[in-house]
Image (cartoon, rainbow, N blue to C red; front, side, top):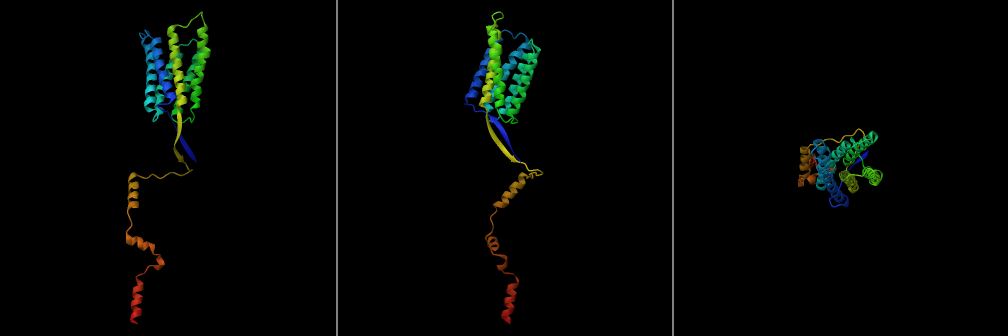
Length: 243
């Protein structure tokens, strides 16, 4: 049975990666503007300022430097970002909304990790996972909130929401930029295990195969066995000459 492993990677000069870098930088800027002066509360500063900014910076660095060789390391900032969204959802007034958000961000952790580690063999699940919540925020939450003149959106809240939108759109662009390659095809036969060969045995086999044959040995092996002279033939010839 033949199995194939897949690996996802990104190109530094691709549009998706560069768009992700720009969007993550914008999310940091919007987060700092929206939370300006709110860092006196240590718990808020850690969970709502330091955590999203740190995860965005780490994602930018890992994808830019290691996106081609080790994209799987990006699961670390994605998990940190999901934790930020889970903590943020705990402050929602609706319990149903909180539960749904926790389920969504838990799915983000599982599906993103499974994709970058090659367990999930397609990127399009991530594209939908990040694209649909972005559209939901735009058309279901943000546009109605902007039309609400009774309870207008504050400047601080608007900047924080812009930061969230940039994070979602950045992850969407990152998912689109992922490319898949097949690595290390293997053949598995039932009940068969490939014998282990040590490095020393391989070196010895190579040395033996590299030793040239002696001319005499090669000549002897070229003569068929029935035509090679035996030790008895000279004795019989000597006896016949005497008689």
